[in-house]
Image 1 (tube, one colour):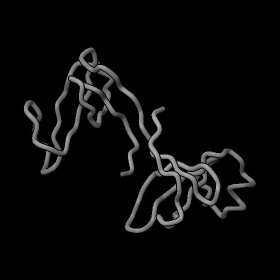
Image 2: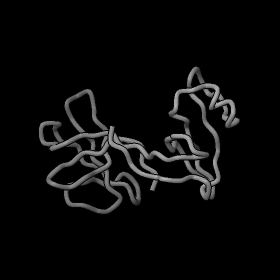
Image 3: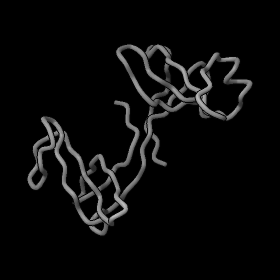
Length: 122
């Protein structure tokens, strides 16, 4: 599972989350859950005060491709969109990555070539 976003622990359970500037945190779950409103099939939301959230962290999916460090930023069928995190332009160029912005290099990689897929909390 590719994850990239906030995770909040509320009442001892982890939820996909979106912190707001208003001092509230929006919690999301794919399952019908008491106190959550259905936004659409498979998507339920509850808004809670930030003070009730036990922990709020950012999680992303990291991996290795062609021996270099990447984060996964997307997926489609048997491909994953990876972004180079090694910070060395000559390496990015050698790998044939697409330059998206200054210091931002990405590529579509065959899922079978991507190794050490894991989640990191930052």
